[in-house]
Image 1 (cartoon, rainbow, N blue to C red):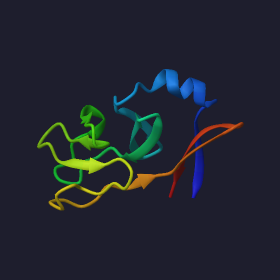
Image 2 (tube, rainbow, N blue to C red):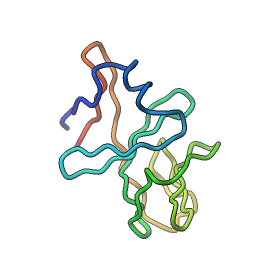
Image 3 (cartoon, rainbow, N blue to C red):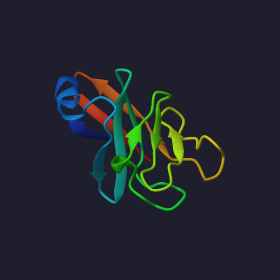
Length: 107
C-alpha cells in the first residue's frame, strides 16, 4: 500500500471537507469519495458498483451510508458494503492522520 498525502494536516482537511458532504478526490487514475461523518473521515471508491455514477454527487444518511444519486443504492462508509446486497461492495481506503499530514492509503 502507498500512502498519498492529501492535506498538510487535519485542520486543513476539516476546513475543506464539510460534514456529511461527499467530496471527490482524484489520485492518479483512482476517483475517491472522501467524507466526514460523525467527526470521522472515510474514503471509498467514487464509482457506484451498480451503474457507475459518481458517489461524491450523492448524499450521506444518518446511518453513515453514502447514497448514489442515480438509483439510491446505499453503501456503508465504514465497510463499503451495499446495504441490500443488490450490487457489489465498494472498495474502502484507509485514512491516516499524523504529524506529517492527512493521507489516504492506495492499493
